[in-house]
Length: 168
Image (cartoon, rainbow, N blue to C red; front, side, top):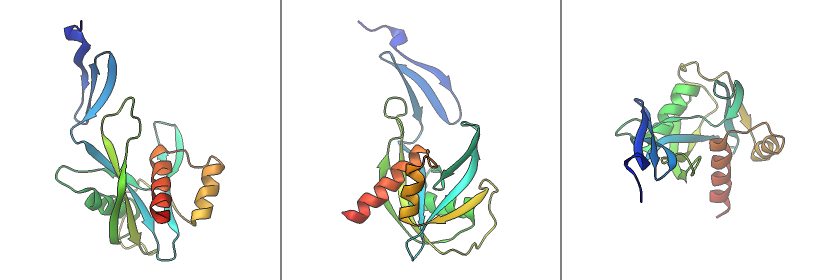
């Protein structure tokens, strides 16, 4: 028999709640799809990665640009906005590749993955979050993953989704 303490909110922030449901801890956010990963792609096929400081891991991380989806915003619109904010690049087209769940044992929400066609030229100021922009081929991306240079789960999943979409 379950008790009243089996289902309770343990922490509530403006961004998420930590709840206990039937003995399991779960992070819940207001939106079922709360974030987006942008996979910036040039006409010649190269991909953009960004290097930035991630305080949770205490160091630099190489990733695809990503961020939150604002209330009422589509995943594709959020990908375009995040790309512009973080890299100063305008999108010429965008398509959603799918959804990922970054930790199915702990986090209830999903993250959308969108491929965004861009040009190499920066056209706007950035928010200063990104330290460096890297342009890589798919082979270079795979080599970086194999060498352990890319460890971000969102980026690893997005890369796989891109490669799978291209081979389908």
